[in-house]
Structure formats: structure tokens, C-alpha cells
Image (tube, rainbow, N blue to C red; front, side, top):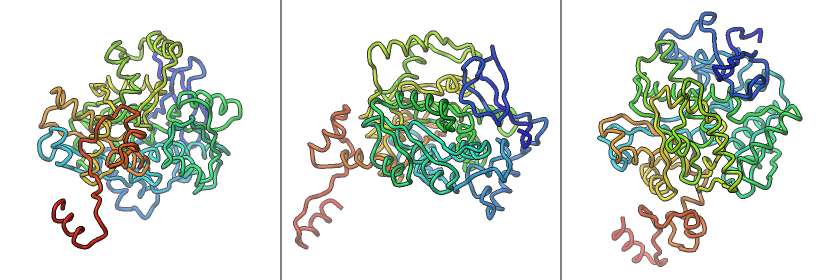
Length: 466
């Protein structure tokens, strides 16, 4: 675009590498079908030479763009002018050091940090990317925006549409594949919500077709501008650590947008000389949605300079189709079998010397309870990062002295049913919500104490249990 000649979209494939104007609305390369990156000609635009330039933005936070935890870093993804950006104050999140959870993981004192993205306006990390994609949609004059969602993306899109009134939201969800905490947001914010027969992968396939046919702007993380905003999560982590990279970033793996964005962020920061060392990346699948873990660890799928084995991926997906395999985990936010950013994640794993693991629903819920007991309650998918860090520590991959940042992607109240079921004394409710997903016990339950409505009994209970 004329406003940003230094920014462009580029095909991920080294065999293609075609470039496109940022004014074009694309979710894949028209020439070869591969994913696209947003790239910058740094010779034409001056990037920040030091973190002090970024810090100066925070001192001028009366400007809404500097107040935003995404856009105060806009010099690191300069595809929009200040006048084109749409912000709702996203990214005011917290990096919390916690020895309580660190002890559970097996780390030395002072070494575990939780990056709590549940503090975003819609309650999840999605707002980081949504403000970036929504701003691009506004730049190109979109009147409607759509997504497929397990819940958090739909809540975020609906919020941006409702608050700004710049466009209408169209949301695709699968039948029975969204928590009420998230669905309530999309409905309350006025989005057109279409519930189709099938799961997230089915909804994703349909929304791609519909947006292409009707010219609706697609905001799922296959949209390269979404990932530009999600890079800011890592910028804020570095900011909180006084610009010193940690040893590990551990992140839940669903559609693999976060891991892809984080890898891109660190590669660019290293290129620009703003960091000298890239942290290692651990991507954690849920056991019932473990495509990345299967392909990476069992089939040895690798980035290979962009020459990854497409036949291996296509064959794996074909087998899933033939067997009718569907993702199944109570961590609904990462209940995805066909991650749209798989190839970008492979690149991130290469750049960040990464590893992949899967954890089961029991491990997720136990880790979630430990996060909650430390006062940073999260939805189940978030806790996959803590469960994964614990697994990697037990394997000796993570050392006790390593500084580890686990990403908590969503707020506790995104899926309160799972939390209540874990702590309940009602065995039927436990079995209905958790037992059906393979959770056999609540090892760290904080159950309510039944007591008579008598002062003496209440005092006795407090003295006995308090």
C-alpha cells in the first residue's frame, strides 16, 4: 500500500517466495497455496535501535496506541499508520513469578514465570492478534469479518465489532465444541453465530469457503496479520524481564498461531540486534489433539529450510479422514486436529531449538489446580503449558535452574464448568464433565465443606480446616 511501501506479504515457500501488497486480502499464496508472512524492508523504515525507544512509548501512554500492550511495539511491525490502527486497550497483561507453581513443576526458586493473557479485554490472548487483523480489515475497508472458533477467537472478534461498530461479526462454531463461558460472549456482543454439524476443523473448512465466496474478511490465525499482533506477547515478556530472554517459552499448541508468532518475533529481534540469544520453545499438545506431537516426534517432520515433507502431512490428514478421527480433549481451546499454522510452527521450532510434547487431560487439570491455588486461575488449555513444563523438567530437558515462562492463554472463567467439576463433591457432576474425558481423580481438589447452619458448627469447621 502507498502508506506502507516497506511492508509486504511474502510466500513462506522457498520454491515460490512471491510477494504481495499488504492491501491484498490473502490467507494463502495465490501462486502455490502456502502460508504468507508479513515482512518489512528495514532499509526503508528505521526499526528501534534499542529497547529504550520502546520504553519511551510507555511514558506517553496518554496516547491510546502507547497504552496498548500491542501497539506500543508497533515499530516492530510497521504495516499500519497510527490513524489506521484500531485498539481497545489490549495487552495490559502480567508476567507473574511464582514459586508455588515453580515447586510443582520442579524448578528452583525464582525461576518460573506465568504470562497471564487472561487479563485481555475479552479474557484471552486472542485480542493481541485480533487488534492487528481487525486494523488490517479496517484498512482494506472490510464490512464483515468472520472466524471459525472453539470460543476465544469468536469472543474477541465479536468484541471488536461490537465496540467499534466498524464491521459485522460472523462466527462459525462446531456442535458441542464451545464452552458456555465463551459462547456467551459472542452472543451477548451481537455476533451472527452459526453452529454447524462437526468440529472446529469442519468449521474452519467452511469459513474459508464462505469468506472466499462472499468476500468476507477472515480473522483466523491463517491470516498473517493476526500473528503480527501476537508477537507482542513475547515483547511484553522481554519487557518484564528487563529485555533478558528466558531460557524457555512453554506454550499450549492448538492452531499453532502463538508458537509461530513467537518464533517469528525472536528471529526478527535477533536480526535487528535487539537480542543476542533466542530462548528455546516448547509446544504442548493435548493428548486428544496431538497432530503436531505425532508428526514431529513419531514421524520426524521438520522445517528443513522450508522444504518440509508435504506428503507426510497430507498422508496423516488422509488417514484421519479415513478413520473419522476427531479431536477430543476438555482443553477446548486447543481441541484442533488440523492446525492451520503447522508449517510456520515447524519454522519456529527450528529457529528456537524447540521441542514438542503432549499431556493428557488429567495432567492438564492437575496443573490447572496448581495455577489456580497460586491465584492466577486459567482455562484448561492454558494449563497445558504448566503440565508440559513439569513433564520436560521430569525428563531432564528443562534444568531446575532454567528460567521458564509458561503462557497462560485464557481466563479461569472461560470454562468454569471444568473448574467446578474438579473441586466438586458431586461425583455425578465430576463424571459428566471430567470423567468422560479420562480424568480419574482430582488430586488437588479444594472441596467445599458441608456444615450445618449453626454458629458452633461453622466455628468448628473453620478451626478444623482453616
